[in-house]
Amino acid sequence: MQKEYVFDVVFEPLEEGGYLVIVPLLPGVITYGESPGEAKQMATDAIRCHCEGLLKDGEPIPDNINVTLKPRIERLTVALQS
Image 1 (cartoon, rainbow, N blue to C red):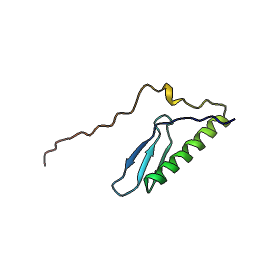
Image 2 (image 1 turned 30 degrees about the vertical axis):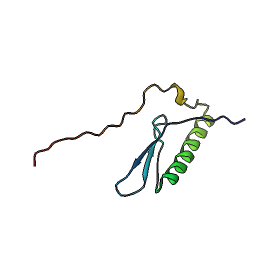
Image 3 (image 1 turned 120 degrees about the horizontal axis):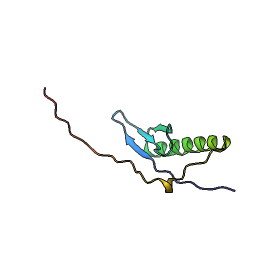
Image 4 (image 1 turned 120 degrees about the vertical axis):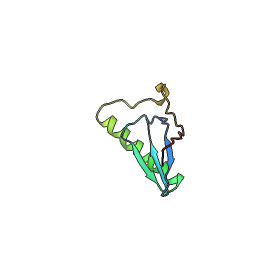
């Protein structure tokens, strides 16, 4: 029987091109893709692999619904003397 899990992911565009993908609920699950579609597929594969490892070790898969702390992304301006 299959069960579906939902994970929030952060897609960060990189200056040199491509996208860095971070899964806040699963520390250490970080991946990259050259396009948004590839980044999404890489993230899906990384999440699946990580969760299969958790199941193999008898550990629970974290439930995104129970996460109350959401990442906050904000742009800050810092002034420096030149």
